Length: 345
Image 1 (cartoon, rainbow, N blue to C red):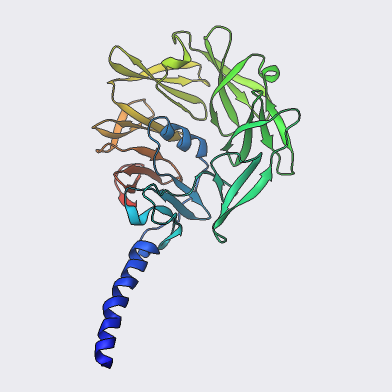
Image 2 (cartoon, rainbow, N blue to C red):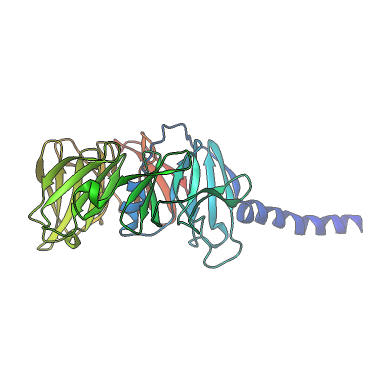
């Protein structure tokens, strides 16, 4: 009788343990090294990828990676924390057919920020407590918050009156951009570090401006009069001194590079309507070309292939790797294209 009960126990217990470990808890050993120098590329990662494909996210904080995994794999949906050799699920919506990861898309002071402003508050996900908490309450002088972004580990608020404020880490928000400061009805098109790239929203669509949030002055500008309108732009990316733009024309994607420091522009590529994504950090800029793969824009503006498969997102989180998402997998590749690793999936 005891042997029969013991067999029944093992018959029930072992499958339950397997289900818990591999489907519910999802904690496993994964030989991957996270010892990299992380960079703040929040704005580029969010806006380049969101322009075409809204999919799982990957963030870097506290020397760990955080991956939002949605309903592609029913039992594995949720948020995962990846550290050296260990991957564990830190959030799970349960057995829902629409389950996703956390609604986070920025990091600030190593905190995972909630995607939206909630009741004039910016919230973050406390990994240890397993819940969202308030990071700060937004109080703007005679204005109301509309959205926020993170750049160079600074927190910026875009207001409903088209002003931009920067959090000073002492409980106050400093006005860093407005129509008065920019001398025009400005339309921000990109943020990078402590700079903003903008165009004139009302007058002739003829110049692209680079504006410094620290000095509150225009640093440089360049002629873009050959654009017909802002809506012509298919893809956009701003870096330290350069802006990359994809303009469809006669069945091709023309990739232009505007160098505001040298005050020159170049058409660096004319491709069939195949440009899918563009992302970069510093001097490294990458294009994803449909059915061809990922290319690095070299210093002479030529294109060098580093990965020969199409991807759905490009994310840059550190100084060593470029991260891609494709078909439920996160992979990363060194910038020379020689080493590739699976991060999650």
